[in-house]
Length: 265
Image (cartoon, rainbow, N blue to C red; front, side, top):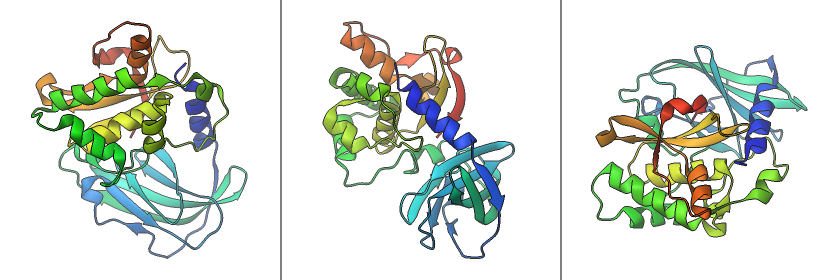
């Protein structure tokens, strides 16, 4: 129901990579913002598909490098990371063409979740950002702002069943500008849309992937930092807008213990 097939394909595609090691000495990673939970990549030496692998402890995240540049999160907190650039050999076989270690000192766990980084990418001149800021204009607390963004999405958008049933690429990334215009999407689309709108309004927000007992398959939702609620709370836009379509009004904040998190961005 909530784009679970798409998200499952994304996860499976990333976990099935076969990597062969080789090293390039080229300066590829820009680490100037590492203590803000952000690393930038600039690479133009290959016409093959490339991916970014970010590892900390036993946790690995893969990202698609689209074009020659990209921004990627260090969302696992302070500590030692390994960053690798992978180049496709064939199929799901990749080789490491550059790898480096970096120590990040992130003073506040919320900082990475205010950044523009894949998959939550945004720019100041985007219509999504302009709209978000107009929706929260005059509101003071993070709670009021988050509620305004939430109410807009759950009452103005619909779940895209056709898209959920389609065969999207395992590397699919939501386009928030497209979602804003079409006013329809799957769970991944809405999680990223809400995160972009929240972050660009100064509210720390995560895109979370995993499972819920009421959802058959993989799912995506948000966590947003609300000081008056004591910290991170769970928000599930897709479920709630589906309920609104049926004439049922839900509350914004969900019981976090019901959600099983596997990834967060």
